[in-house]
Image (cartoon, rainbow, N blue to C red; front, top):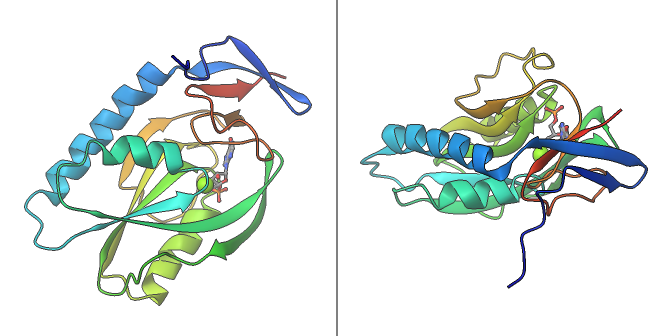
Length: 187
Ligand code: IMP
Ligand code: MG
């Protein structure tokens, strides 16, 4: 059997050290809660809501969450980028168009983490631009000390302090997404 990557106390990525912060089991429980809230809100939908996976960071969260959703939904992906190394550049670039037309659809935006909120603001503006019927935001993690935007965050699995983290889809310059647990920078 191949073992899942994680459960070490400390890891090193590029030039930085990280220590274990959120074990997978805790993350899983938090995702279950969010899934239950989404299921309650979308129960008995006549439409097929869109699960909009924001690449690359949200892949693991989105996959985990989708397995718990009990209504018919369609997976659509798009890609945005704003981070370089461990800091947000403040400029959000759309690097891949949505893989389906979102006009007239109810969309649940699936984010890995909301930090400054620049990405989520750009995304909700974009949902209006493309004529989505409704958009809700679901994020695995939120750094509340960093977030001062007006966009409502409808579903938040966990709140964390504003330190840089990796794992469970999140990267440091491309590396670290494959860890099943979340690690925080050790400075
Ligand atoms: P925001 O636009 O500042 O809210 O940042 C959102 C994006 O930056 C997230 O979707 C992540 O991809 C990335 N990001 C923010 N904080 C972290 C972190 O601590 N580690 C890795 N990526 C992060
Ligand atoms: Mg992201």
